[in-house]
Every structure is written in C-alpha cells, then in structure tokens.
Length: 191
Image (cartoon, rainbow, N blue to C red):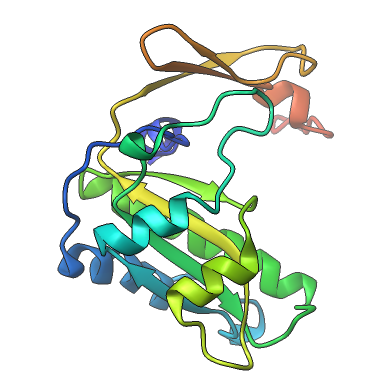
C-alpha cells in the first residue's frame, strides 16, 4: 500500500480519452466504504465525464498555485467529481471526511489506470451551475480525473522553502519532508 501512496500524485496534463461511467461509479464506491467521523456521511458527490462539461469546467479552474504554469484546454481532464456538503460552513469533521474520501477515490482511480488532481481553486458558482448542483448544497473541492501525460517525481528534502516545480517535457518535481522531520515523538520500542 505504501508504494501505491508514493505513486498517488497530482497530475495536471491528460489525454483526451473517455472515462466510462462504470469506472467513475467504481471510484465513487470507495466513498461508501471509507471512514466517516461519527459515521455522519454528510458529504455528497456529483460527477461528469461529458467532454463538453469537462471543457466548460476546465475554463473555471486554476491548476498550479506554486508556479505560474497552467495546462492548456487540450490537456484538461476528461472527468470531474464535485465534493459537496449541505452546509455552507461544514464542521471540521466534514472536511476530514472529504480528505478521507479523496484519498480513497484517488487510490481506486490509480488502480483503474487513471490519475487525479484535487482542486480547491475553481469558480465555485460557475462550476456548480455546470454540474446543476441542487439547491441546499455547496461545493468545496473538485477532483479532476484522466489518463496522465505528465510525470511526477517525489524528492525527499529537509528544506520546505522549495515548492513543487515543472520542468521540461511535462515533468513535475514535488518536494516532501522525510518521516523523521514530521515525527514529533521518538518512542524507543525497546523500553
């Protein structure tokens, strides 16, 4: 599983191939089996694999906050999942549930041969209109899904002043802290 998590990266360039609805249903089924705080299961989801809607949604997104690059429309994803909640101000635990759901969905997508990117930078009102979000729900995150054409490499570093970067030939480098830098305690199991 650790190897799958290492390979589960954010991709930002995709082939223009159809993602079958059955595959999106498999990806969304992961949510039904995922943990939920207090088992509240408050979050809701909508998806689209319509090329027309995906192009409309793509125009309402921002893709690379730490760098000035953005993919072209021809590199856009061919499916999206919109994460929603019935409250305009969800509880902290609803956001935890969103994170758990996203991790589960991206891992299932990876198993099916797809890559993803979690987007928080999008024009919420316009994307909600494109999806036809029912009254009484609010969107919070957008999961882009497709067949990746870019490559992503993880580099372990002790210096987090370095942000992710995009190099030649559609390659991204992502810098991550090693385990010993994020661990606050060091328990000796021999004692």
